Image (cartoon, rainbow, N blue to C red):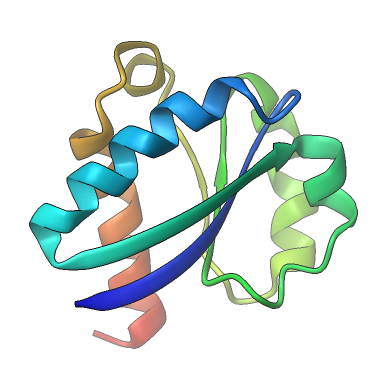
Length: 108
């Protein structure tokens, strides 16, 4: 099982935690140990992203994505689809955004 460390950002760091719990559970089906820390977007914009393999951004703070991408370097930064977020469809996000970004990061 591959371990992936992620940081997730929303307005205050609370609402995204529900979605991240679903992501962690769904990732196990793909032999992925997804470890996610959640914070408010203002903290994520200023903190070191070095310890993380992936940055996840809630749809209601997606306007911060570009500034976070600049700081993330080559790390994937994904914005959660609004409908997937609202319906807690973590499997959709894994298949459509997270897994493809992780594969391209690994070069395969």
